[in-house]
Length: 333
Image 1 (cartoon, rainbow, N blue to C red):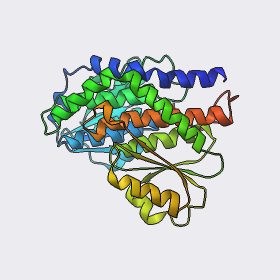
Image 2: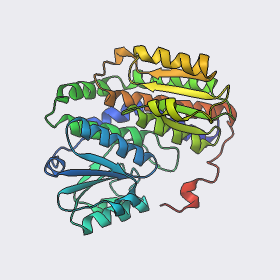
Image 3: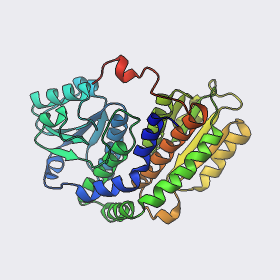
Image 4: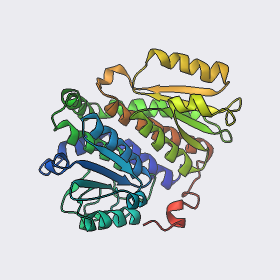
């Protein structure tokens, strides 16, 4: 493997401790900033957009009015003093997120920045900084730990707010702090299975719904940025309706769910026996002890990160860097 791929692997592997590190470091002093407002708007780009989607699920699950937007979309959304905008940017340097935060401030909204870099430019755009502990020292490789630690941070915030899910969320956070090594070991095993399934050429559909669709979105990004196979995130039900022309014999699919449900077996039979796809079902082991789909999304995300990584190691082990990354082409930092 190249030094670049070694670095990408390191920021996946480090999640066995960084998620617990982040949960234990969450600052709850300014939690009232989200409970005192009528609307929560989460914004982010790339992996941070997926984190924003995750935050939407987290806050809606406990009864708060939350939506997620791509930063430019905030131009089409009314903002006022009853709105709190949470800008997610691991590196603290995403230009579109910085612009959106400035617009939010200009219109009187409260702002929060969820970042892994307290010295990033985004920290200047808010008085309320939520800082993750991803334990990485560069944001110029494939993001992994900064993504899941941001998800864990949002889960920790929600667990402090009174709701019907509070006991379950607190249980899940406790589990996340205890099973890091087992979780990453399981994800690595799943990743090797995925890499054996995936071949260049046919598209790879990552099918899920609810919070776990965030894992599918992140998996799509990981596969696409390595440029070995085209990844598509598909909603479980929407896949049943609208994929008629895009599926060929031998196409590839990953069904992603929080736990093994009775309907999953039927769904897998349709994928493999009716549509003639190569498919694998990812679901979190019961022994992890998670009560909510919100927590189950995190190990599923790591499994897909591992799957993309082992796939590029299989087909392009000499990869020195991304093929011209869009981040560079569009100058987004």
